[in-house]
Amino acid sequence: MKYALALAALAFSCAANAENFRCGKWIATTDLSVAELLARCGEPASRQTRTEEVRTRNRNTGLMGKTGEVIVETWIYERGTQAPPVVVTIVDGRIKSITRGKP
Image (tube, rainbow, N blue to C red; front, top):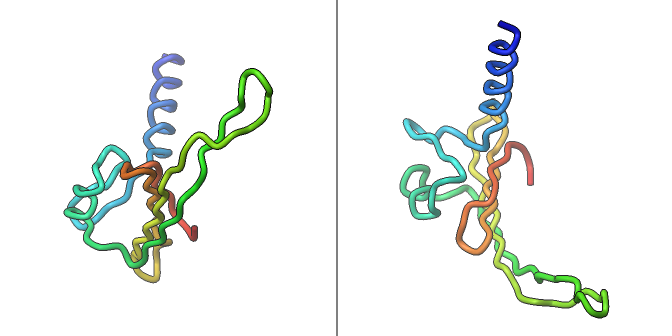
């Protein structure tokens, strides 16, 4: 019985921490493509785009070096006055995270 309760509590806590939000009758998750997110939730209230360097450590010298760049987009969906906005972070065309609150 103790194990069943512990397992249920663990499953509930994992579901509570899942990155998702409701768009009308849809649930938007990080598993969606950007096109699916736009189709389900529409255009965000605001978008910001920036380019960030990807840096890795050289195994021989130990120095950090630039190995590429990624495009990071931040989309903000406003949900009215009673709920915090939803911030969707997209890295190179894939949804990386969904959080609530200001970016």
